[in-house]
Image (cartoon, rainbow, N blue to C red; front, side):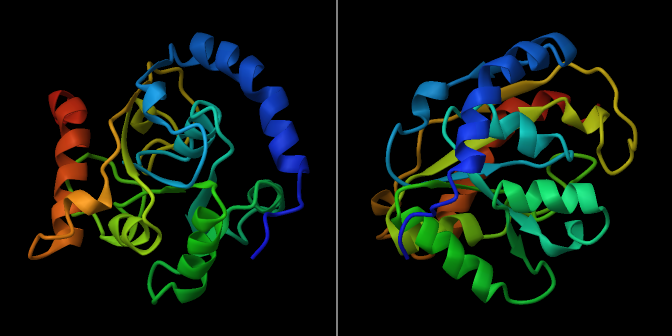
Length: 214
């Protein structure tokens, strides 16, 4: 499928990126480490842990590349404003309870077209890191397309718009972007998908483990 002709979301994201950085730095005391690990061109699977509804906008404005996220379908239909935002920024709805064939096919098309896709291997917002075993979809997308999988850890957003925190709250947020995982390094493993996701977990865990009991 040819590259999307909807330039509006990309132009808006570029315009608001730097003002967003300033606001986020003040409101959330935001610090981001490892941006140089995001490739400047080509597809990439951006795989992050997931605490809060804030994760998508904070990641989306701090990766320095326009990134489309897979969003569970239960997020749609609850608010017209939220639906409009998700649709404008081209979020790809994914069926969490069934087999998400359409969403995965669309994600593959986007990756092969040279654009990043953001995924949350835990599959949902969690109150505490390490509770849910990561699903293998991120590794599967990297395998099908040959693009790198980039582990990302985000800490602090569980205190605002998380499963147990309904309202907004000022909180310190840290984002760590790790070196890419390359599919070819796992091709000879007995279970390459699980091995890749195990390494994803270890790279994210080294940043989040100190706060596991928060």
